[in-house]
Image (tube, rainbow, N blue to C red):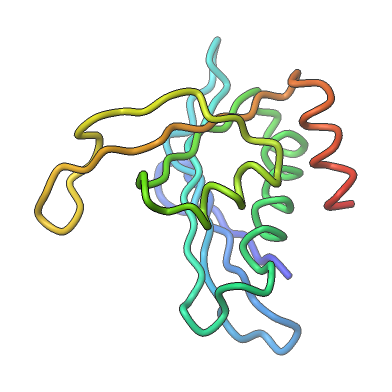
Length: 136
């Protein structure tokens, strides 16, 4: 189950909870840009105890409906550390496409890290349709 709320400056935080209301993780949509861009950036985490059973995959799928439905955005971008294969699989399972690698993209643990860049756009046709059918 996903519980969403609007936070500062129009960003959206979605809290990933199970049937009992226990917090499992969080998804954040930030950098929401309107106008000609209609885009946002996606970030997420799931607690170590809940990694693996498809929690993040389902949550990302749910947030796609919010972004392309209620928010009416055109594009979502997400980034992963190069070695974070699990997160890359989550994005790809939901229809995201790797669009490149950004060297020295973010400072993590005191060092500038390279990141893979992913995106999904509303008119990706089959990619988005297949992702939607898996999460419906």
